[in-house]
Length: 351
Image (tube, rainbow, N blue to C red):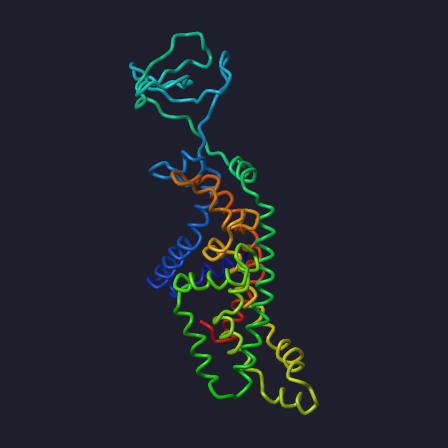
């Protein structure tokens, strides 16, 4: 804490904070709000009910209307602050609403006369409440375990294959001199300019022809070769001295042995970065699994969340709560491995 306090208390001006310090803190504050504001809003909204989510103007914290059990009524009645004709304000329980008229009773004396007032003279009694109802209801209607297993399978297998295929391609483009290697690299990198929506239909036709439609393998295979991964690993492998490879060849090592016992161990920092990127890409992938997967038992978490969206209504309360659950695993992975991202970007020249 002391180190954090010293870091935050650093000033450019010798006699006190000057305009540069104020501008820096303003910039950092705006950046923090832009980065973490949507996340906090998502988590807070996951505890709200449907009416509170659609309320305007929106509120940050989840509010729930208080209810009270009244003798003679099977269900708890909602509480309202009612402004009466004499200007006094009382807390009454609403028994029904007819048009713009609300009919209320005194919870302490339910046998007394029903008080009828315009709904504009009433205000619901609310309090901040973090309830897990959305998570419980969402888990009952959302096959979280099956979708989680499917997502983990896709993420793990795709990441392993991505590391294998991309490292082999990067090894060839960085350590072998052959005609057309530069052109192959440029063509591979230029595919970054082609969005998935452009090649979606041809890719789907290929997957259908090879009998991979509506299967997790059909989700994995097209995503394992990534130009970003090849470029990242190639840039890192260029820093490995060629003399190491020549020494291994003089000792009689085959090219496969050089790849497995020399290149792969030395390229572990870059492989770790690509593994983290691959986990985040595959875990959050939505469009391609949505097109390929048709059976609900094969859905991934991101595709399963789409089931909360109907033709006329979106169940935002359940959708937001399940979204928070799906984000937790990848957030934990990123929190523990984020230092490798910084190291990898710095060592591979990828910015």
